[in-house]
Image 1: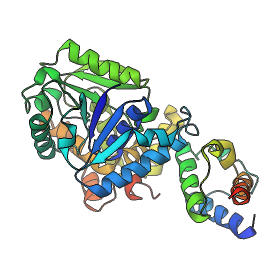
Image 2: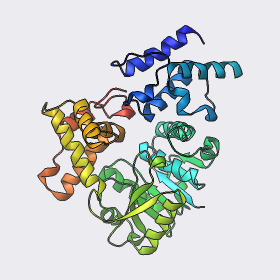
Image 3: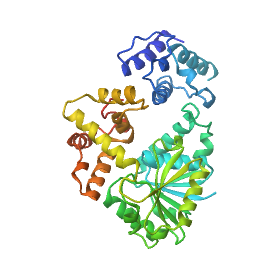
Image 4: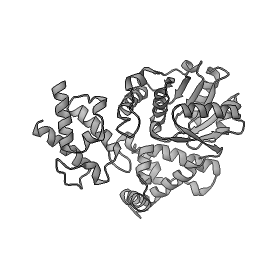
Length: 81
Length: 279
Protein backbone atom coordinates (compact mmCIF):
# COMPACT_ATOMS: atom_id res chain seq x y z
CA UNK A 1 0.00 0.00 0.00
CA UNK A 2 1.65 3.19 -1.12
CA UNK A 3 1.83 6.33 0.97
CA UNK A 4 0.16 8.17 -1.91
CA UNK A 5 -2.92 5.99 -1.56
CA UNK A 6 -3.03 6.58 2.19
CA UNK A 7 -2.72 10.30 1.53
CA UNK A 8 -5.62 10.15 -0.92
CA UNK A 9 -7.81 8.41 1.64
CA UNK A 10 -6.88 10.93 4.31
CA UNK A 11 -7.53 13.83 1.96
CA UNK A 12 -10.97 12.47 1.04
CA UNK A 13 -12.03 12.00 4.66
CA UNK A 14 -10.64 15.31 5.91
CA UNK A 15 -12.18 17.03 2.86
CA UNK A 16 -15.59 15.88 4.10
CA UNK A 17 -14.92 16.48 7.79
CA UNK A 18 -12.41 19.35 8.02
CA UNK A 19 -12.91 19.65 11.78
CA UNK A 20 -11.21 16.35 12.60
CA UNK A 21 -7.57 15.56 13.17
CA UNK A 22 -7.19 12.22 11.54
CA UNK A 23 -4.78 9.50 12.58
CA UNK A 24 -4.48 6.45 10.33
CA UNK A 25 -5.62 4.05 13.04
CA UNK A 26 -8.52 6.23 14.18
CA UNK A 27 -12.02 4.70 14.09
CA UNK A 28 -13.90 7.33 12.08
CA UNK A 29 -17.31 5.80 12.91
CA UNK A 30 -16.58 6.22 16.61
CA UNK A 31 -16.36 9.98 16.10
CA UNK A 32 -20.15 10.11 16.13
CA UNK A 33 -20.90 12.24 13.09
CA UNK A 34 -19.77 9.80 10.41
CA UNK A 35 -22.77 7.70 9.43
CA UNK A 36 -23.30 4.69 7.20
CA UNK A 37 -24.12 6.96 4.23
CA UNK A 38 -20.53 8.14 4.41
CA UNK A 39 -19.41 4.50 4.34
CA UNK A 40 -21.19 4.24 1.01
CA UNK A 41 -19.34 7.33 -0.24
CA UNK A 42 -16.07 5.71 0.87
CA UNK A 43 -16.84 2.56 -1.13
CA UNK A 44 -17.57 4.63 -4.24
CA UNK A 45 -14.46 6.75 -3.73
CA UNK A 46 -12.16 3.76 -3.23
CA UNK A 47 -13.52 1.80 -6.19
CA UNK A 48 -13.18 4.79 -8.48
CA UNK A 49 -9.85 6.13 -7.27
CA UNK A 50 -8.04 2.80 -7.07
CA UNK A 51 -9.87 1.17 -10.01
CA UNK A 52 -10.88 -1.86 -8.00
CA UNK A 53 -14.12 -3.70 -7.42
CA UNK A 54 -14.57 -4.58 -3.76
CA UNK A 55 -16.20 -8.02 -3.47
CA UNK A 56 -19.52 -8.14 -1.59
CA UNK A 57 -18.08 -10.15 1.31
CA UNK A 58 -15.52 -7.38 1.93
CA UNK A 59 -18.26 -4.74 2.12
CA UNK A 60 -18.49 -4.46 5.89
CA UNK A 61 -18.09 -1.47 8.15
CA UNK A 62 -14.97 -2.89 9.80
CA UNK A 63 -13.09 -2.55 6.51
CA UNK A 64 -13.87 1.18 6.39
CA UNK A 65 -13.34 2.15 10.02
CA UNK A 66 -9.90 3.66 9.60
CA UNK A 67 -7.35 4.65 7.00
CA UNK A 68 -5.37 1.58 8.09
CA UNK A 69 -8.32 -0.76 7.53
CA UNK A 70 -9.08 0.75 4.14
CA UNK A 71 -5.43 0.53 3.09
CA UNK A 72 -5.37 -3.16 3.98
CA UNK A 73 -8.61 -3.70 2.08
CA UNK A 74 -7.21 -2.01 -1.02
CA UNK A 75 -3.95 -3.99 -0.73
CA UNK A 76 -5.92 -7.27 -0.57
CA UNK A 77 -7.83 -6.43 -3.75
CA UNK A 78 -4.66 -5.41 -5.57
CA UNK A 79 -3.03 -8.74 -4.71
CA UNK A 80 -5.99 -10.83 -5.82
CA UNK A 81 -6.71 -8.76 -8.92
CA UNK B 1 -44.56 -13.96 -7.29
CA UNK B 2 -46.06 -10.97 -8.99
CA UNK B 3 -45.15 -8.93 -12.01
CA UNK B 4 -44.72 -5.49 -10.51
CA UNK B 5 -44.56 -2.36 -12.64
CA UNK B 6 -42.63 0.55 -11.17
CA UNK B 7 -43.10 3.92 -12.84
CA UNK B 8 -40.49 6.60 -12.20
CA UNK B 9 -36.82 5.70 -11.70
CA UNK B 10 -35.83 8.45 -9.28
CA UNK B 11 -34.68 7.87 -5.71
CA UNK B 12 -38.00 6.36 -4.60
CA UNK B 13 -38.76 4.38 -7.76
CA UNK B 14 -35.36 2.72 -7.82
CA UNK B 15 -35.68 1.91 -4.10
CA UNK B 16 -39.12 0.38 -4.69
CA UNK B 17 -37.85 -1.65 -7.66
CA UNK B 18 -34.90 -2.92 -5.62
CA UNK B 19 -37.09 -3.82 -2.65
CA UNK B 20 -39.53 -5.99 -4.60
CA UNK B 21 -36.82 -7.50 -6.81
CA UNK B 22 -35.02 -8.56 -3.60
CA UNK B 23 -38.29 -10.17 -2.49
CA UNK B 24 -38.28 -12.28 -5.68
CA UNK B 25 -40.82 -10.40 -7.80
CA UNK B 26 -40.30 -9.65 -11.48
CA UNK B 27 -39.99 -5.89 -11.96
CA UNK B 28 -40.55 -3.68 -14.97
CA UNK B 29 -39.09 -0.26 -14.21
CA UNK B 30 -40.25 2.56 -16.47
CA UNK B 31 -39.01 6.12 -16.85
CA UNK B 32 -39.29 8.49 -19.81
CA UNK B 33 -35.61 9.40 -19.36
CA UNK B 34 -33.15 6.63 -20.38
CA UNK B 35 -30.43 8.36 -18.38
CA UNK B 36 -32.56 8.13 -15.23
CA UNK B 37 -32.99 4.41 -15.87
CA UNK B 38 -29.24 3.90 -16.26
CA UNK B 39 -28.63 5.82 -13.04
CA UNK B 40 -31.30 3.78 -11.27
CA UNK B 41 -29.72 0.49 -12.31
CA UNK B 42 -26.34 1.70 -11.00
CA UNK B 43 -27.92 2.85 -7.75
CA UNK B 44 -29.77 -0.44 -7.31
CA UNK B 45 -26.57 -2.40 -7.89
CA UNK B 46 -24.63 -0.28 -5.41
CA UNK B 47 -27.39 -0.33 -2.78
CA UNK B 48 -27.87 -4.07 -3.13
CA UNK B 49 -24.13 -4.66 -2.74
CA UNK B 50 -24.05 -2.35 0.28
CA UNK B 51 -27.16 -3.80 1.93
CA UNK B 52 -25.38 -5.83 4.60
CA UNK B 53 -23.00 -3.00 5.43
CA UNK B 54 -25.96 -0.66 5.90
CA UNK B 55 -27.53 -3.03 8.41
CA UNK B 56 -29.76 -4.97 6.02
CA UNK B 57 -29.62 -8.56 4.76
CA UNK B 58 -26.85 -9.81 2.46
CA UNK B 59 -28.18 -9.38 -1.08
CA UNK B 60 -27.13 -11.08 -4.31
CA UNK B 61 -27.02 -7.99 -6.49
CA UNK B 62 -26.76 -9.96 -9.71
CA UNK B 63 -29.96 -11.88 -8.95
CA UNK B 64 -31.70 -8.61 -8.08
CA UNK B 65 -30.64 -6.93 -11.33
CA UNK B 66 -31.66 -10.02 -13.32
CA UNK B 67 -35.25 -9.58 -12.09
CA UNK B 68 -35.46 -5.94 -13.24
CA UNK B 69 -36.36 -5.01 -16.81
CA UNK B 70 -36.20 -1.34 -17.71
CA UNK B 71 -37.83 0.66 -20.47
CA UNK B 72 -39.26 4.01 -21.50
CA UNK B 73 -42.60 2.69 -22.76
CA UNK B 74 -45.52 2.37 -20.31
CA UNK B 75 -46.92 -0.21 -22.73
CA UNK B 76 -44.53 -2.72 -21.11
CA UNK B 77 -46.84 -2.65 -18.08
CA UNK B 78 -49.90 -4.04 -19.90
CA UNK B 79 -49.75 -7.37 -18.03
CA UNK B 80 -48.54 -6.13 -14.63
CA UNK B 81 -50.44 -7.34 -11.56
CA UNK B 82 -49.61 -4.22 -9.61
CA UNK B 83 -48.20 -0.91 -10.81
CA UNK B 84 -46.49 1.38 -8.31
CA UNK B 85 -46.30 4.96 -9.53
CA UNK B 86 -43.43 7.10 -8.21
CA UNK B 87 -43.21 10.02 -10.62
CA UNK B 88 -42.46 13.61 -9.63
CA UNK B 89 -44.80 15.05 -7.01
CA UNK B 90 -46.52 17.29 -9.56
CA UNK B 91 -50.20 16.97 -10.38
CA UNK B 92 -49.88 17.66 -14.12
CA UNK B 93 -47.16 15.04 -14.53
CA UNK B 94 -49.03 12.47 -12.44
CA UNK B 95 -52.25 13.18 -14.35
CA UNK B 96 -50.63 12.41 -17.70
CA UNK B 97 -48.98 9.24 -16.41
CA UNK B 98 -52.15 7.93 -14.74
CA UNK B 99 -54.21 8.51 -17.89
CA UNK B 100 -51.70 6.46 -19.86
CA UNK B 101 -51.61 3.72 -17.21
CA UNK B 102 -55.40 3.50 -17.26
CA UNK B 103 -55.35 3.11 -21.03
CA UNK B 104 -52.47 0.60 -21.01
CA UNK B 105 -52.94 -1.80 -18.11
CA UNK B 106 -55.34 -4.72 -18.01
CA UNK B 107 -58.57 -4.24 -16.08
CA UNK B 108 -57.41 -6.31 -13.06
CA UNK B 109 -54.21 -4.35 -12.48
CA UNK B 110 -54.04 -2.63 -9.12
CA UNK B 111 -52.58 0.87 -9.10
CA UNK B 112 -50.53 2.01 -6.15
CA UNK B 113 -49.60 5.65 -5.76
CA UNK B 114 -46.35 6.26 -3.93
CA UNK B 115 -47.00 9.88 -3.20
CA UNK B 116 -45.94 11.97 -0.26
CA UNK B 117 -48.89 14.34 -0.25
CA UNK B 118 -51.42 13.97 -3.10
CA UNK B 119 -54.71 12.41 -1.90
CA UNK B 120 -55.26 8.86 -3.18
CA UNK B 121 -58.94 9.57 -3.90
CA UNK B 122 -57.93 12.37 -6.24
CA UNK B 123 -55.50 10.14 -8.14
CA UNK B 124 -58.12 7.37 -8.27
CA UNK B 125 -60.53 9.80 -9.94
CA UNK B 126 -58.22 9.74 -12.97
CA UNK B 127 -59.05 6.06 -13.53
CA UNK B 128 -62.08 3.87 -14.20
CA UNK B 129 -60.95 1.54 -11.41
CA UNK B 130 -61.00 3.60 -8.19
CA UNK B 131 -61.75 0.44 -6.17
CA UNK B 132 -58.34 -0.89 -7.26
CA UNK B 133 -56.32 2.17 -6.32
CA UNK B 134 -54.42 2.42 -3.05
CA UNK B 135 -51.62 4.53 -1.71
CA UNK B 136 -48.35 3.40 -0.17
CA UNK B 137 -46.11 6.05 1.21
CA UNK B 138 -42.70 4.39 1.16
CA UNK B 139 -39.90 5.89 3.20
CA UNK B 140 -36.41 6.48 1.92
CA UNK B 141 -34.19 4.44 1.68
CA UNK B 142 -36.99 2.04 0.73
CA UNK B 143 -35.13 -1.29 1.07
CA UNK B 144 -34.08 -0.44 4.64
CA UNK B 145 -37.41 0.70 6.09
CA UNK B 146 -39.54 -1.85 7.94
CA UNK B 147 -42.90 -0.11 7.42
CA UNK B 148 -44.84 2.21 5.13
CA UNK B 149 -48.14 4.06 5.36
CA UNK B 150 -50.86 2.09 3.53
CA UNK B 151 -53.61 4.43 2.42
CA UNK B 152 -57.18 3.61 1.56
CA UNK B 153 -58.86 5.98 -0.87
CA UNK B 154 -62.59 6.72 -0.71
CA UNK B 155 -63.50 3.88 -3.12
CA UNK B 156 -60.65 1.46 -2.35
CA UNK B 157 -61.92 -2.03 -1.50
CA UNK B 158 -60.61 -4.10 1.43
CA UNK B 159 -59.47 -6.71 -1.15
CA UNK B 160 -57.24 -4.13 -2.83
CA UNK B 161 -55.76 -3.11 0.50
CA UNK B 162 -55.07 -6.74 1.44
CA UNK B 163 -53.42 -7.48 -1.93
CA UNK B 164 -51.15 -4.48 -1.49
CA UNK B 165 -50.49 -5.45 2.12
CA UNK B 166 -49.48 -8.94 0.99
CA UNK B 167 -47.05 -7.43 -1.50
CA UNK B 168 -45.52 -5.29 1.26
CA UNK B 169 -45.34 -8.29 3.60
CA UNK B 170 -43.55 -10.32 0.92
CA UNK B 171 -40.79 -7.71 1.07
CA UNK B 172 -40.70 -7.72 4.88
CA UNK B 173 -42.60 -4.48 5.24
CA UNK B 174 -45.54 -3.74 7.47
CA UNK B 175 -48.30 -1.57 6.07
CA UNK B 176 -49.62 0.91 8.62
CA UNK B 177 -53.24 1.72 7.76
CA UNK B 178 -54.04 5.37 7.38
CA UNK B 179 -57.06 7.12 5.90
CA UNK B 180 -56.77 9.43 2.94
CA UNK B 181 -55.80 13.07 3.43
CA UNK B 182 -53.12 15.19 1.83
CA UNK B 183 -49.78 14.33 3.45
CA UNK B 184 -51.33 11.39 5.37
CA UNK B 185 -49.71 11.25 8.83
CA UNK B 186 -45.99 11.34 8.14
CA UNK B 187 -45.76 14.25 5.76
CA UNK B 188 -48.38 16.40 7.42
CA UNK B 189 -45.89 16.60 10.28
CA UNK B 190 -42.52 16.08 8.58
CA UNK B 191 -42.91 18.53 5.70
CA UNK B 192 -44.03 21.31 8.01
CA UNK B 193 -41.08 20.58 10.28
CA UNK B 194 -38.61 20.74 7.39
CA UNK B 195 -40.30 23.86 6.01
CA UNK B 196 -40.06 25.57 9.40
CA UNK B 197 -36.42 24.47 9.77
CA UNK B 198 -35.72 26.08 6.37
CA UNK B 199 -37.37 29.29 7.65
CA UNK B 200 -34.97 29.30 10.62
CA UNK B 201 -32.03 29.24 8.19
CA UNK B 202 -33.73 31.76 5.87
CA UNK B 203 -34.30 34.18 8.75
CA UNK B 204 -30.78 33.74 10.09
CA UNK B 205 -31.94 32.33 13.41
CA UNK B 206 -29.62 29.35 13.05
CA UNK B 207 -27.43 27.66 10.45
CA UNK B 208 -28.47 24.31 8.94
CA UNK B 209 -25.77 22.65 11.07
CA UNK B 210 -27.17 24.22 14.23
CA UNK B 211 -30.77 23.30 13.47
CA UNK B 212 -29.76 19.69 12.87
CA UNK B 213 -27.51 19.68 15.93
CA UNK B 214 -30.50 20.60 18.12
CA UNK B 215 -32.57 17.71 16.73
CA UNK B 216 -29.73 15.22 16.98
CA UNK B 217 -28.26 16.25 20.31
CA UNK B 218 -31.38 17.36 22.20
CA UNK B 219 -34.04 15.04 20.76
CA UNK B 220 -31.78 12.10 19.94
CA UNK B 221 -32.98 12.00 16.31
CA UNK B 222 -30.49 10.12 14.11
CA UNK B 223 -30.73 12.95 11.54
CA UNK B 224 -31.83 16.57 11.74
CA UNK B 225 -34.64 17.93 9.51
CA UNK B 226 -32.32 19.62 7.02
CA UNK B 227 -30.09 16.57 6.59
CA UNK B 228 -33.35 14.73 6.02
CA UNK B 229 -34.35 17.36 3.44
CA UNK B 230 -31.07 16.77 1.61
CA UNK B 231 -31.68 13.02 1.68
CA UNK B 232 -35.27 13.30 0.42
CA UNK B 233 -34.42 16.06 -2.07
CA UNK B 234 -35.01 19.77 -1.49
CA UNK B 235 -37.12 19.95 -4.67
CA UNK B 236 -39.30 17.06 -3.45
CA UNK B 237 -39.78 18.80 -0.11
CA UNK B 238 -40.88 21.98 -1.88
CA UNK B 239 -43.37 20.12 -4.12
CA UNK B 240 -44.81 18.34 -1.09
CA UNK B 241 -45.26 21.56 0.89
CA UNK B 242 -46.87 23.14 -2.18
CA UNK B 243 -49.30 20.23 -2.43
CA UNK B 244 -50.25 20.58 1.25
CA UNK B 245 -50.68 24.32 0.74
CA UNK B 246 -52.92 23.77 -2.24
CA UNK B 247 -55.06 21.06 -0.66
CA UNK B 248 -55.69 22.66 2.70
CA UNK B 249 -55.67 26.27 1.42
CA UNK B 250 -54.15 27.07 4.79
CA UNK B 251 -51.31 29.58 5.08
CA UNK B 252 -49.58 27.49 7.72
CA UNK B 253 -48.30 25.40 4.80
CA UNK B 254 -46.76 28.32 2.89
CA UNK B 255 -43.45 27.15 1.38
CA UNK B 256 -40.27 28.84 2.61
CA UNK B 257 -38.77 31.05 -0.15
CA UNK B 258 -35.38 29.47 0.56
CA UNK B 259 -36.71 26.07 -0.57
CA UNK B 260 -37.91 27.69 -3.81
CA UNK B 261 -34.60 29.41 -4.43
CA UNK B 262 -32.59 26.25 -3.70
CA UNK B 263 -34.84 24.25 -6.03
CA UNK B 264 -34.40 26.81 -8.82
CA UNK B 265 -30.64 26.91 -8.23
CA UNK B 266 -30.34 23.14 -8.52
CA UNK B 267 -29.37 22.69 -4.86
CA UNK B 268 -31.49 19.56 -4.53
CA UNK B 269 -29.51 17.83 -1.76
CA UNK B 270 -27.48 14.63 -1.85
CA UNK B 271 -28.62 13.62 -5.31
CA UNK B 272 -27.23 16.85 -6.85
CA UNK B 273 -24.14 17.02 -4.61
CA UNK B 274 -25.28 20.15 -2.78
CA UNK B 275 -28.28 21.18 -0.73
CA UNK B 276 -28.17 22.47 2.83
CA UNK B 277 -24.83 20.62 2.89
CA UNK B 278 -22.17 19.86 0.29
CA UNK B 279 -21.54 16.20 -0.60
